[in-house]
Image (cartoon, rainbow, N blue to C red; front, side, top):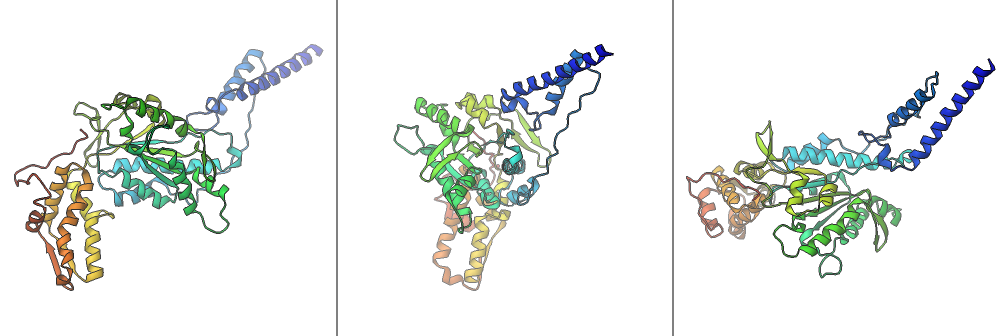
Amino acid sequence: MILSVFLKKISFLLVCGTFFEFGAYAQDQKPTDLIDSGGLLSENLLLESLIKEKEEIGDEKPIVITTEKQKNIDLTGIPFPHEIHDELIKHTIAQDEAMKSLATFMHQHLVTGRLRENSNLHSLFLEKPNILIVGPTGCGKTSSLAVLSKMLKVPFAVGNATEWTAQGYVGGKWQDLFEKLYSNAQSLLPKENINNELVIKKAEQGVVFIDEIDKLCTRGRGDFEIIKRVQQELLPAIQGMEVTLTNGTLNTANILWIAGGAFAGLISSEDSYSQNKKSRRKIPIITPQKLASYGMLPELAGRLCNIVPFSPLSKEDLKQIMLTSKNSFLQQHIYQYKIAYNIDLKFTDDVIDYIAEAALRQQTGARAINPMISKIMEEKTFNIQEYIGSSLKIDKATGKDILKDYIQDPIEEENPSLVMLYS
């Protein structure tokens, strides 16, 4: 009897010792060592370790682990991915899959920020869904982010990689981005009771967009060392570091980073593609390995791990941009003429088709549309008094006559529509 009691006590002490030993071990680990694939602290890891020790000491009593149930966080003010997507596709045409990805990652960033505000979860490691957007010029990369900024009221700062050089060289510096982020965060907060601490906190949950990041890659460029150094300097900023600003110190650990670039020549006809079943549009599959071969540091490609490919625009896409996009420059002209001058401005189908074909030949995507419409309307606007209170029709003949000097190579009727490629 005495021997039985003695053995049970020893078993109990062994279990307790094992538990505290594991606890000491867990404290020495990095946060990611105790995180499962769902992003939550892994009870299974603790449970499996204790069960293993239990089997070794032969304890007959089951081990029960209880954890305090966390309350759900308040998601008020955070739109769901489909709501963000629905707003994006009103402005950006023919990029449905890319808009789904952007909407999902932005929602995830907002939820992650809300989780960090929960005092019970301060020790929980939450990975940032940093994004790399790859696509040809004028396909909607930058304009999509402008829509996100306006819709979500999140501090945004935009920097162009072509303007940067490494520290110690003449030129702009990427650190200026954080001053812009601070200023944008300040503009989003109510003026009453605003203070520097609140602005910093708001900025630390913001988004930084690096446009034309492909210009920081070393492929085919002579200034290899300068470009490589700028990439290396960006690494700790994306991972998380403290940056000294005019008004304080900002920690970049929780800032979402988005980078975009055309990466001309990255995609070829031999590359792999996926296909959007709904639109039958081919979407290139881009891997970190391909980016490394293009001249991006593998460490930088790894930090921008969520790659969102944008598709090249077809002639039909360019027509839909003119006809249906909320950012349509053509629709702005029609609205302005009606409200300001009571003029019914109409572009015929054939001139819209002609402008789309001409824009496709420029190989600058949607960016070619606005200058051509402006060129067509320049003379009409100069003589606007002649048309007040009446109708004004712009047909193909008018378009061809005005754009004959603008378009160097005449568009032949029998020419098929060109497909704009990355290369």
